[in-house]
Length: 368
Image (cartoon, rainbow, N blue to C red; front, side, top):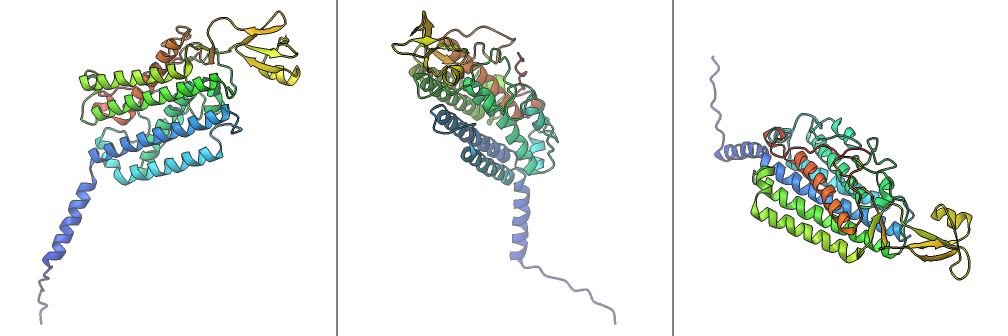
């Protein structure tokens, strides 16, 4: 007896479920969804990481944490933040999405790779987790550079001991000679000024990048976004916020890599000449008076405006050493210049359209 073929009837409900599954699979490949997700998550990383770092440095300046920053508590928060950001990107992005968005099959994204970015460029990208790690690595290197530049008196600490091309934490800072005194500022007016610089710089960074990211997510390139009237209004507002916050906390302080101090070693402001604040306290047994000078054996006011321990030349200068920073207005302008370069770098890493031409990567800062 021959074997008769049997016709198998598949219920329509099963076919419907299969069709939905196929549709969901196709929908998973969604480059625009991936791009929106990683832009949002990298913004989240930026906002929280910089706040964590700034808060730790402020507390260290005031003597409330021993340093170096990030301390164990801050480092744990940053690690948890990275994990959350990574998970969100992985859940929204496939390698096909990354390819469609113009990313290469590696983490060498065509940007300057001095300092910590050199390690980023060497990372593999063979799955969504590695894609997320690549984006996080580049972002962190630039954010640490931003924090180190803003906190000039803690730059070496923030960058893990090296602020140049060998740093494993920061992108190279650029023109860094002369290096600002590396020290805690104490609970002083100078420390309050440092808080203002950090807050103004951070606000500017967030407002400017948000404005450009919103424009870029519409498909516009850098030139079109910088010519958009609405974007220009937002960028002008970011500059105003930055300058007002710095001015409010700093008054007329001038940026000085090594501000004057007097070593008081006796009664009635009697002083001795000390080579450093440590020498004053540890060797001469004196007390440091900031903004004073030892003149004819007595501590007196230093001439000119008060100071903020900061860079003498803007690290983002086109050539080293660049133009000297001599006023608070110079400092504000430098904060903007550094943040503009960092944002240009981050935009070129996040928006890879047209082979990277739409948002071109800027050259890295020169080294001193």
